[in-house]
Length: 275
Picture 1 (cartoon, rainbow, N blue to C red):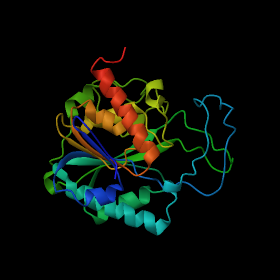
Picture 2: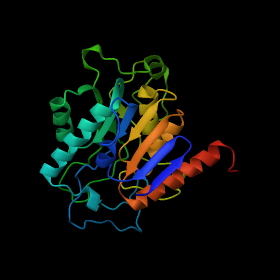
Picture 3: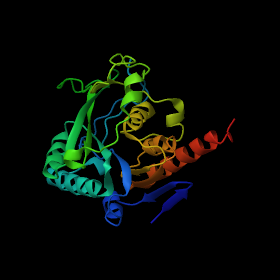
Picture 4: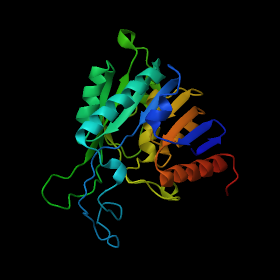
């Protein structure tokens, strides 16, 4: 087992369900969960990697990753097990954020209800620069779903940074005005800054500003953050901005190394080591 420990981070190359099964209850203040969507197929659809798609920010190839090939019964069972652990590990005063698409959002919603995880909000992340549908047999998928849930029962003790979120102005979001409540539709382009891609990229990598917005809403400074699927390390970097103690897992060695490289670069830049 590979383990990366640096400052207040512990990132392990391991299946997160195995790792979480060994942890104590009510330990974390926040969990950011971006699981496999079950979206891939064995069909080798591809787009010419040397050709840019006008208006969509660069090259694209349809994802056919092994880790995203789940049978439906496997997807439901793993989702239920994952959320069972998250409910146990996250404090009633904390909350859980779960990314999904139409491939797995039904599983996530059903499992939340079976486990009595209350859905605080369903957020629609609108991607105005979404990739086109190359088969010309479907509408262009232009959004993903994020569920904000908690386990605190009727008391609803979960942390919500209401005033700061209400007064925030988010660059490029045409739905949000300062002084107005944040809505459940977020207009956030899927483009990433060069720095986010400097050490490689993950096929379902989220833009840093999307995760930073979640943190503004629900993160407690100096609290504890759980990241079951590290991917490219975006959530871990967001947690570092809040000086959180972070536990993360990644099952793929390539992305484990990618996360470490991004984390170390961020830490050096924060300390002024990089020019």
